[in-house]
Length: 211
Length: 211
Image 1: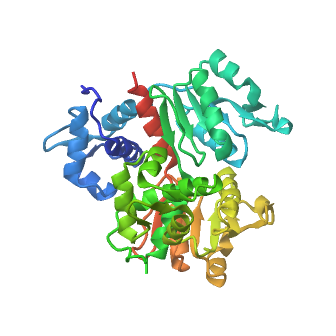
Image 2: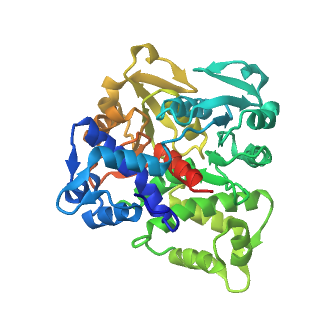
């Protein structure tokens, strides 16, 4: 049913989670069928954008009948990769690391951290939910021995590149980076950044110029 | 020196914090002058992109002489709005709210939260650093009486729109939203989102398709 995903734009990749979220809400409300026009009203994308996006992946609806919400929700989840689970670790067990630990544990249960790591010996052995904080010296061994897929970096910027290098050496497949730096990572490792300060500064700019 | 900011693309607005960050690093290393070509090598943008970006705001450098790093850093800070301070509150005092409280307190000292708010009575009166957690029932009064500029929403998605409505009613000027929903906000209020789950799902997609 689905075409291969080559040539999909980053813009579309970033719209997919949004579709997934809105379809979940529609499902919860008991909506079974929705047209691109109705979806357009809720989501704020144009109906033609929506039809074009869905066409990229194959045939989700029938002209004039609209889309089956449940099928579409499941298919988009599958496209995103939510039909599989990922083994993750969090490096940096401060407030942000702890927030992300709670968050990823809940999030569809697909990204549950297997351990957290920190340099502060006073944190070793403490549990955040079910997740134990370990000595960062054990990072490489843990990642290798537990076939960890994703390393989540919640350290200060000054430590982040070193952590990334160590994750890469231990054959990590993806890095989710919250540290405020641009990591240098080999091409075969997937890198996704959440640059919180860039968002804050964009807000500042927009407020200053919103006169 | 600077042209008015009308007509600046969101893409450029999002590049500004990145310039600011790299220039800070160069300053720290004692670099006084840098060419667009050298900056291009460090940052990964093309030299012509960089020249074009800076030209949008006026004359930062002299042909053949490169840019004065300190002047450029200060000017870009000013363009971003870091020559002023913002009075903020955080709504939602869980792990994420606490992480953001620590983060914004440090961040150039421009966004220091004046208070945090939560619905959980057991948290009332607790301090995160210097910031007290208060009853969310006091939100509107506090925002009005303390001329709060920015409301930072760290609640679950299910409460976020209500919180946003209350902030708007209390004349907030900007909202920094971490809740996983698209808030409906009047046009005169600036809205900036950090959609963490969309980033996580993009990572998932990229890993699934990185074969």
